[in-house]
Length: 392
Image 1 (cartoon, rainbow, N blue to C red):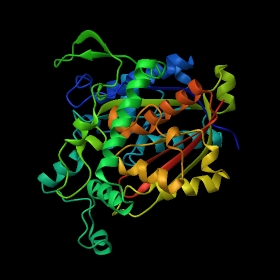
Image 2: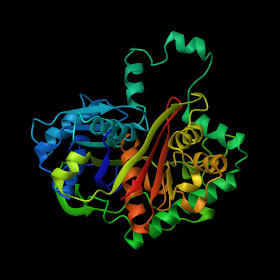
Image 3: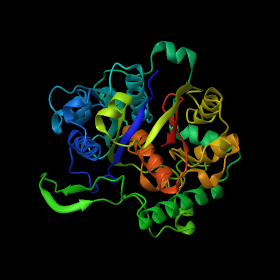
């Protein structure tokens, strides 16, 4: 079977809710990343055979196949199709898996995988809230309710369950959050994100350009202190998690260009990385966010590797208990985890986070001269994708 290579990877800097990316329609924002991938790789736009985009809230401005709409908003020709993926927070990581599988099969030679989410314009939970308000029902079917009687699936409850089950106290969560900001601050000041971020013009409320460019992740708190983080109120009474120890609501887009050997030959470029392993695993949907732990163990076994073989890990910081519990379960090295900070500092633009993390991972491997990187993230419904890449 053919190999799959990442030859270009890019992302926007994260935007706060109502912040510097709020003026962008999500299809246009995704198109900016698509055009950047074309420019970075030098590929003939007509040679892109498909665009697969992850997006969680596919309603309103993100409805009617956001991937195809992003193609039509980009410089790609109309002949390039697009399809949208929803595996909740793992949507664009799954888009990468689908793209890699397409080029490995030989049915395609060059595919763009990515994701987009404007959490300003399409707030979280909108796909559920709008139909419920209109009396159109809920995603919970009678069969699901029978299987999980009395259960209200909640990521917030899942995060608290993990903290309790693994004995992670609030103080540890607060310290972890501070470290996420510190690492993101250091990475920003060192220019670690410069090669991966696509500068985006800031638009005014009426859609006009301001002439100012957004190129620094807006969620980083450069003045973060443990005292300030510790003082944030609890999400649930008697719980351990706060907004400061959870991922930030974020606007953003990201993407990677994936090719096989034929695509490499046609481009004549050196790849950033090779896809070494891909897998996805379902787990308990009630605790929901614990899936990255068994999924990583499953992936390492399938890949014939140990966690010690992996040089850098990106584990999405949906809530601080997840990466902390992951480190404990895998007996992994904290110094290799989210070395440039994570979603607590940088933001979590839902459907865009998968290829956002991969973009950061492949660039970090390159800057540090490391070989193997692993990415995983918790996903609604109790699932987790795992991707292992080899820097080339």
